[in-house]
Image (cartoon, rainbow, N blue to C red; front, side, top):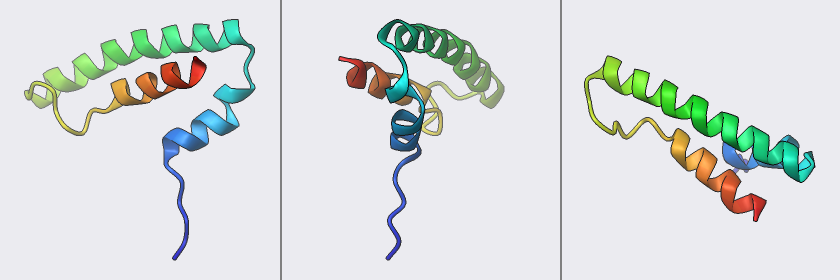
Amino acid sequence: MVFCPSPLLVIYLLLLQQLPPLLYLLVLVIAAALGVYLCQAATDKLGVHDHGGIVWDEFVGYWITMWA
């Protein structure tokens, strides 16, 4: 059996963990704002409110948790 870490963990360990705190905060704010726009656009295009495949909020929520 091959271990395949979640993309969330890979992004955090390789990219975000290395950033200074203020830059990390800037990335969080940009990711959240861009995510709101893109998720709304995807929801409008799909015609379904809160589609289960749209999980950007979970990515950003995890990054916020890991910042603390």
